[in-house]
Length: 119
Image (cartoon, rainbow, N blue to C red; front, side):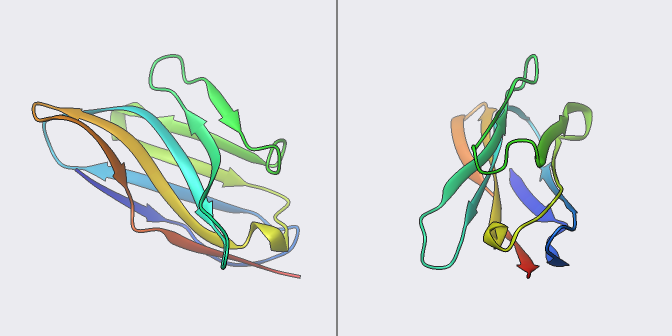
């Protein structure tokens, strides 16, 4: 299974971006998915997560009310809509998914997409 993020870029403070994470491969199913981010010199942190069943979501306090996580199970794709971006949102954003297949369960990561918010 491969996870590929897209949608990162440079945006001014107050702007918006939409990140996508597409899972490719065969013979797997995806359970929970999440977005993490890692700013320069900081640890990777959880931004938002979404379950596979009822689509329950959770957000870091720092992004509540500004970011929305969603997923399209038919397309094995997850999204992160980001509004009112702040310079402190600048980071590499990583897609994470709990993947189940015949070989077991794997915690998969994408390669990351850079989001830069200028002041």
